[in-house]
Picture 1 (cartoon, rainbow, N blue to C red):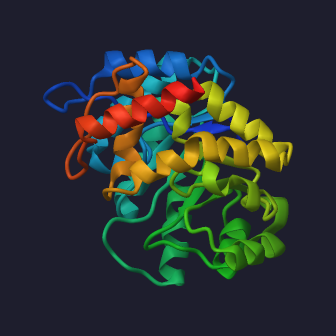
Picture 2: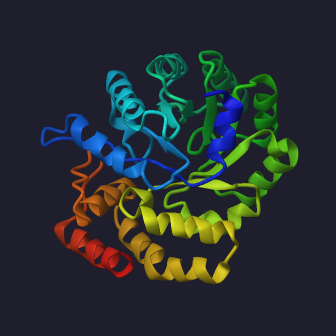
Length: 301
């Protein structure tokens, strides 16, 4: 898919981070993953981020990422754009971007480099190297040790024609205002804070027109309805849904670091779709917490 076409598709609707399924030995379970993708792609979502954050991409080897991406591309068969991850240092991320193109992915989500701190000049070179490694459209994830200033985003947008978007994992109002004021609609802006629904309405005013929903994994109709309320700027409906489900969900999520991923798989288990376990260093919800989540889901299902 041409980068410009991909950008248009992605900003038109809700995006999803599908989980990656593992078997009892914590090896990739392709059969269950494909079943999940077939279900996920049937609700009108605008894009799927394979092996991303909620997909535990940080726990996957490069060969596993390639297998996950190829399974996703084959399963959805062009019905929904598939974006592959690029992770780690520059050489690894560039190799994964090339592999994504070979696998037939439609785009790349460039995640922060692993473990190291870097200045803005180094981050600009890192992103530019990955963009140069592929013809696919690239979205850069601004978060953790790779938070981009408005000056850096402007340089990257000018230097790299196939850079199509910025995914915001910071939620800094001034920074997003500066970025949009400087770069405008040259890029698309994707909400990427954990449980993005919480921030979706205020960030819409800053140019963040869509977001990736983890809730879509197990409550696709609720997630799509929430997105429609945000896009309509229906504050009453948004805050009703926040109170009915999202805020109580956050209360469970915030009990342990890493639960932002674990609770999604628990949600799938709660609706009978077998999300399975997470890989270490993440930990699964306790049985009591899973029951609490199931009761919460039942109220909005």
